[in-house]
Amino acid sequence: MPYSLYITLALSTLSLGLFSPLRAQGRLDTSLVAYYPFEGSALDNSDYGNHGTIFGNPVCTTGVNGNALFFDGEDDYIIVEDAPQYATIEREVTICGWARPSGLYNNTWMTILAKTLPGQDKTPFSVIYREQNVIPYLRYTGPNSPIWTRVDVFNAPGSLPLNQWSFFVWRFKEGQLDIFLNDELVTTYTFDFTELLKTDGPLEIARDSPGNTEFFQGTLDDVCIFNAALTDGEIRYLFASGKTEQPSNVTAIEQVICSGDSYMGYTEAGQYQKVLSNQYGCDSIIELTLRVEDFTTQTETVVRCAGEDYLGHTESGTYRDTLISDGCDTIRITELIVVPAVYSVVEASFCDPVYSRMYPGPGTYIDTLHTSIGCDSIRELRLAPPALQQRFDTVRICAGNSFEGYVQPGTYLDTLKSNTGCDTVRTLVLLQSPAVFTQIDTTICQGQQYAGYSLPGLYVDTLQAVDGCDSIRTLQLALWEMEQVAVSDTICGGDQVFGYTQPGQYVDTLVSDTSCPLVRTLDLSVVTTYIPNAFSPDGNGSNDLFRLYSTYGDLRVEELRIYDRWGGLVHESAQFSEQELTGWWNGTVGGKPSATGVYTYSLRYTCRNLPFESSGSLLLRR
Image (cartoon, rainbow, N blue to C red; front, side, top):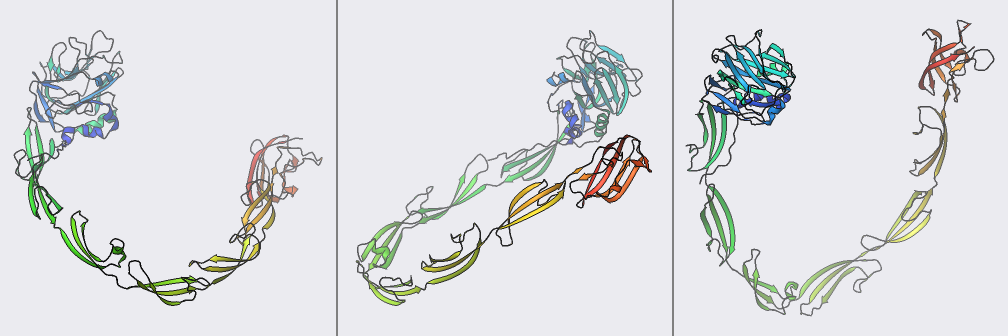
């Protein structure tokens, strides 16, 4: 019986047409509200599916991208009913597409697209060209306009030429209309309104019905509507992307049939191609990958006991059945194994404990048992009279212990009596483990334990070895006293000792070389520095120098510079210690007293080999 496994439809770049490059441009894709590639239909290939209805008999022909539709200029047109997406274009809209006009309606009109208002001339917009030179003719209506606005643009240098493909773009944004031909801006017009009229009228392609009805004569391809004003770069991108010829429409189908069935007239597996035409003459190609499956074979092995029935079979053998299903029929092959009843004879001694616990004495017993697959098995058990049994035992005891009265190691022979009459001759090999003595000398830290002991001394313990015998352990235990260390140190700001950066006393518990705790007490001092922001070099012995003071008292100055308020250098010294007073500034320049005022300084110095910098302002008073 035939069945369809799966069908995959793959649209080539023809059915996508201009939509393929749009998918590569995020903003173009999201703002696209209508896209008609005219592949022999009026289907909308945007995300919204606002499909149109074809009137008349437009003919499918070769377009810029795959196929296009030729309109005869008499009664061929397309109607697209109003959709919510068209309500988003009142402030911004871009209408574009490819046109190849072959004539003018009544030698005057070339109507490409119009949004109508039934029974009125007031239409939100119309894309129309007119006159022999096919100049743009604008008809837009604002939200509050009593009538539509008509503008003849006689100065447009790039109107639509006849009998050749042109890319037209009409872009409206808040009152300004820009018209492009191919990738060039040919005219701009500004209206006295910023929004278009909202209507629930249909969209007409290749016809304009308000007032006198006009039709488009020629070929249209890839007509798009965006609810955004595309940039010049996006328009150039669409023009460049649309000029490439695309392959024809291809539908790929993968089909599976059963052996003996057919699909589209084909009965053999393989790849086939058919060229079809729709009612408008557009060719489409079907690429068929056909697979033919034979009957499914199902194999099973079944085990049954003798006398049981399986699917009407009671004997071992191979059976073949045909199962009918909605798909291909299945051949079931059953390997049936019939297990016959098993009869066995077992001879054993009654003294075997397996049987002596189950049976009262020697003799013959018939038992019905079950095999692992559940079939019956008949066993004849023949138990022989008692016979003397042999037994060998090896036992180990600790020194000073006994086993069944024996205290010395050796080999002993005994006869063990049984209430069933099955006596046993036992050979006993008795082994003895000697006492174990262990001497341990070790040292522990204060506060630790070893074997439960924390004080130094000699300890003797009796333990149990792995064989259960006693083990004598002598432990000589010594004790390490806890070490204590006191450390005093001085650091500069920004340095650290043992991770500490602030003055104070720190107590840490460490591990010494003996692995015992060590208590370290650190008294830490931190050098502080002070730089006055004013000095008075009056010779009174107080605050006569501009200098740095520190609790360390012996910092190393790498460089000191003093500048006046105009940036002039008035003092410079380097490489002197904090106590060398001649290196500091005494308020003079060239041996003469400096004027009272504000100066700036920059100071670089080291504290215990660490570099520091300071800068700021200072006041010299007289």
